[in-house]
Length: 334
Image (cartoon, rainbow, N blue to C red; front, side, top):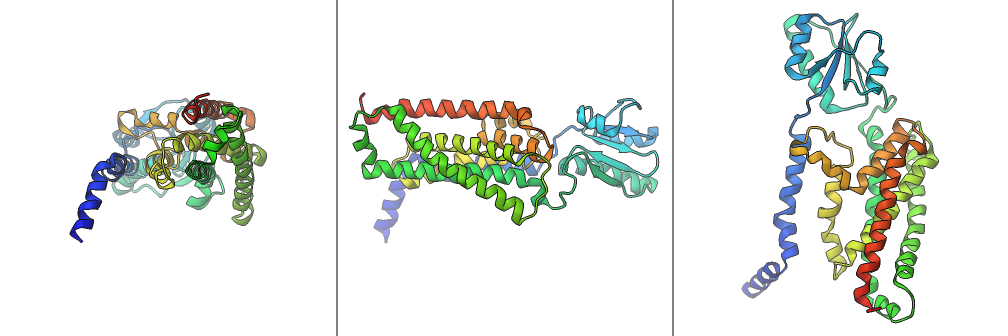
């Protein structure tokens, strides 16, 4: 037994990737979770209607109170992003938010609790500009889960399968033929891409029909975004697999490549992250896919409105395709 223990410890000591996975990655992920769920660093702006100076002073302790004028409706204020919430005290207390956001609502509720305690204010009426009819947390975040699953599963399958081909020697034998490297990568990407199209289509309609979700946007546009995200996952999975020597090593990349992207996909409010860590979302493909799905399915926008997200995803596909072609050269000197 002593010999087995020593051998395992020596193996772990020599495997720097596994050591980092065990000791460093969990610390990073836990820190990210803390900033996402354990802090409320978001300095939100609130537009008040019908509030006297006393009520305004309560809100100024927790929020930035803005004057947007009386000629704009609550809907216009939220659409123009002049404020994160509109609180109307004209009759009863009415709170209107852009969308379900626990961080913003929690901040407002903190103020209202103080008001209720000191001034006997009545419970508020809460409404949202978007996300109306989504009663459960699953319904509110279904768009994000569609994007995450469309990326994660294809990334995993393509990466493991490519490593398997190399392990069997199939790739080396293929590279002995006159076939060009772009053709190899293109064929593999297309093959997995067909699988991705079928998978994303089945996943989308299963979610909509079985769980009876009433999205407001175009289903065709949503599926197209999911397919683009799936192709990005395939290209990225192939690239990552080039640095893995076994299927197990592909799995080791999940905590590094996938989990941080899930936290930055938009399922949690990101504006409260310190040190501008929320900017990390701009280098994660899942963020662009989920944000595009949110615009289409929740906000009811068209495919033309998500061209920034589609452009980034298309650019990532081209980038990883080129990188795969370049790094594949080590399997053939031509």
